[in-house]
Length: 106
Image (tube, rainbow, N blue to C red):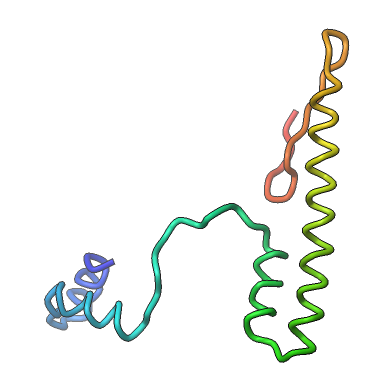
């Protein structure tokens, strides 16, 4: 990101600050953590989590109920997929794929 900042500063004919100062300001003023997500989550789960963190007491309760319902449906789908996988044999093939963010091609 610092290199992008330097490039942008040069295009605007502004002298860039030193990297150490840039990092200090970035990490102390913006407080944006960088880490790998602990697991993949869907947009709905992320939305519920944001509602839980930013709502009042009634909103938190409702968002938690919605999130639990959504998580239960996802778990049921995973268990159905596992059952289908266990039912395969030489005569029965099971194909499954996620259509959430992808187009199916033949």
